[in-house]
Image (cartoon, rainbow, N blue to C red; front, side, top):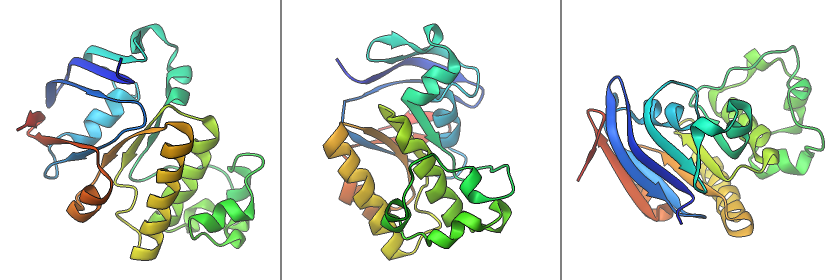
Length: 197
């Protein structure tokens, strides 16, 4: 049984879509801007209403409380939103300086105000907030779009380790074809809200 099954998923400007993601797989979602990639991730994360069925390990999204679903199917948006006065107030307990360093983040960021973070720092810190939830599926909306080559390599290595160690599945939106060739087990191509051949 696939980890994720999507059946006739539809919402304005998207679908109907049907596909599956195997446990431990990395599936890239590609397509031009405005094709519906972020709309798809938001529907899978149960953030936006939609028609059709989404199942995780055979369990329908509609039968799981939204907060519980979002721990299993975690969404990393392209532009995370932060509240609070210091970054360290927002980080999970037990996050070490080594965890920050693994993604090329300076531990001094802990004392920063969230609004002072760059887009790349904000997204990497948001990823470090999601991983302790031990999601089964991670929905990634262009997680390396604001990163240089070294930090992109760090991000890819961390997520690859989690796939291998924990069987984490990834649904990864990207415009980077070289990255897709490096990492993807499969690719979903969206065009005008539909799956393209």
